[in-house]
Image (cartoon, rainbow over all chains, first blue to last red; front, side):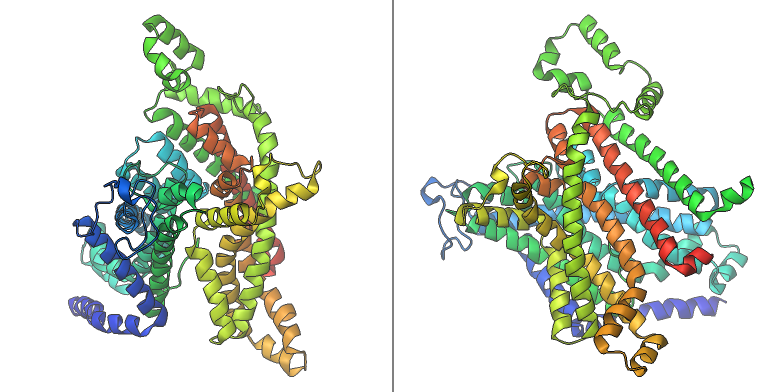
Amino acid sequence: MTAAIITQAADAQKPKSRRFTKLMRNGAGAVGLCIVLLIVLLGVLSFFGLMPYDPLAQDASARMQAPSAAHWLGTDQFGRDQLSRVAAGIVNSLMVAVVATVISAVVGIGLGVLAGYLRGVFDVIVGAVSNVLFAFPSLLLALTLASVLARNWFTVSIAVAVVFVPIFIRVARGPVLALREVEYVNAAKATGMGPLAIVWRHILPNISNIVIVQLTLSLSWAVLTEASLSYLGLGTPPPAPSLGSMVLESQTLVTIAPWLLVGPGIALVLLIIGLNLLGDGLSDVLDVTREDR
Amino acid sequence: MLRKLFESPVLRRILAAIGTLIGVAVLVFIMLRALPGDQIQAAYGTEAAALSPEQRTALEAYYGIDQPLFVQFFSWAGQLLTGNLGISTRGQETVANMTMQSLPVTFQLALLAIIIALVIGVGFGVLAAAAKGKFRDWLGQSISLLGLGVPTFLLGAAILTIAAQLLGFNPNGLPYAHPWENPLLNFNQMIIPAAVLGFSVAAPILRTTRASFLEVSELDFVRTARAKGISVKRVRWNHILRNASLPIVTMTGMQFGFLLGGAVVIEQIFSLPGLGRQVLLAINQKDFAVVQSTVLIIALLFVLVNLATDLLYRRIDPRVRAE
């Protein structure tokens, strides 16, 4: 029995490097990963203050300049460098998206796994809660929550996270229902392992593939939701640059300064498409059917 | 007899939907009442600070917020059941009246959008699946990727500014026109927002169509149909698509429900006075009665559309009906 668990564990360890090779051979996955890495790199540079300009520094002598060698994406009406602002906006988008996804994944997977494993009353309650959360169109729920919470980047993350909790519940609960009947789980039960230990050692490793795919897709939806909230004026408050509010601000100036819309727009589209492609690639490589919303 | 009725899956689904709606009402209430945020502060703004303690107590009694939350919830729920959705503290209009005005706008927009989405999604989905791995497949997949990746607010804002500022076409700059008063202007105001929404919603429909079509086309009856001499086109659109339609129906229903409440951004950009804009305006004006009831109505519509989709699914799939 112990031998069986050890083989199981060894199986889970082995193909990791091969998986990466497979992902790089998968067209969508490789392109997606490259795009995401490129954008993350821009974000990291901005985070450590390595961009050529301060995203908030105004320069009256360089207002509304078209893209040039000095300002690759041009400048806005306050003379702020658009590329530095886009990079700072990426940091903000990613920060909200990552925190929101992590919170919703931890809560959602926790609830989903326990509901699927324990069944009974707990399962019914978790099912009811996720049905209620699913009954709201996602942006509307995030919008309402964001409107009542004090506004800062963390509360925006919470508002976005709540929307994705039921998705993780559903993704985790399904496979657990099948897994709890599997022989090695029964064997572990027979040896007197507690439910939490069984979930940790035997159930979670087996749903890791589906979770990895779901994490990638949720990141892309979280970026989209955060941007939509910012566009509606309910995201991270100014002056912190956010891709969504930059699109909103650019609208009135777009005929004289189209680069103001193009920069944040392209960054946003690339980030979402990159994450989607990566999700597609991962679901091919890890052999998981992706769940659309 | 009664017991048999309770075993009916249709009734069970309806009961579950009612249960969900009760949960929705509780959640909406908790979000807007129990979380910090003061109705008096919202209604009187900075003047709230000048209120004497007696005035404040009187106002709290007037709004009913001196009662325990439990009592507040049931009095709100009781009002809802009698059709009283509350009154806008700003507009001095009943939420029921406001909704009668805004719901048809959102409904028309969602309907137009879903038609556009079905044409794009099913059309390109079938073409992509029928030519798996070829150029048309690549084209279909690219369309769905763009639909997923380009946020509606970005596409909407870009098209609106290009049309308005470069081409001088801006019907949405005019006040909203009712379809029965000025159908042409109404169509002009609706078509771009509907197309933007339709394009983004087409992506999941396209993906579902492609996957379902590929699955069905592997089945034996398809080969038999071809062997009988039925043309490729006919097999594709009549035989395979019909059998692949179930997941497409479900996905379309889900997306339609989503559009009824998810059109906030597009309604805002194109100044369409729909449900989404009603919520957003109320949020910005801190008109909580309106936010609370409108969000509830949207969730109700969403649940009803999903229930209808589910029941429709049972009607058209003999396998589910037999269970």
